[in-house]
Length: 87
Image (cartoon, rainbow, N blue to C red; front, side):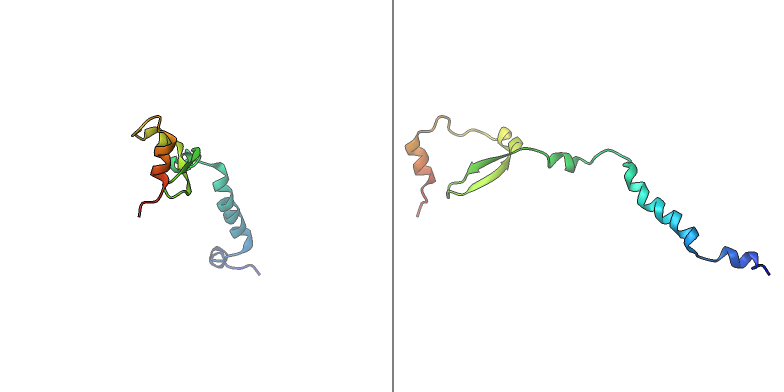
């Protein structure tokens, strides 16, 4: 007594499902495509800077390279005046 061919077509069993499931897990391992630009930008170096209120901040080095220098060779007394909070 064999099952009818129509009944065999519609059965959903582990033998048919596991290969599909395995391929689904295997496809991401091939790594198609190029790495995204966002991932490459996150690898940039950071530099620690001092804010006027005395706290430190990590800033990307590329932002510092693009910044504009307002005053070069500032003296210690003028730097101290800049760092003191204004009331």
